[in-house]
Amino acid sequence: MVGSLVDQLPLAQATVSQHLKELKRVGLIDGEIDGPKICYCVNNKNLAKAKAALDKMFSKIGCC
Image (cartoon, rainbow, N blue to C red):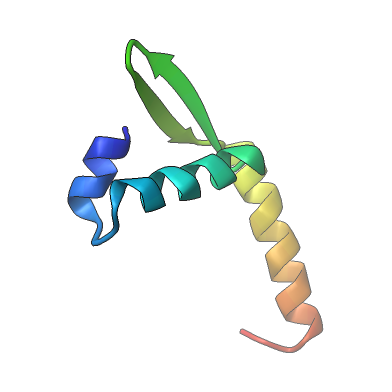
């Protein structure tokens, strides 16, 4: 939930919400509406795909 994240981060609620919106848009997280709140979780399948793509990209440029 956004409120829980805001409590842990040195960012404004609006900033956290915008980042969550973008992460959801690209499929890295999923959001489930629970009354007036949205509960977020990591989409492990899409996160693994993104990690593989980044690993491939960085290996091509000789980094890490």
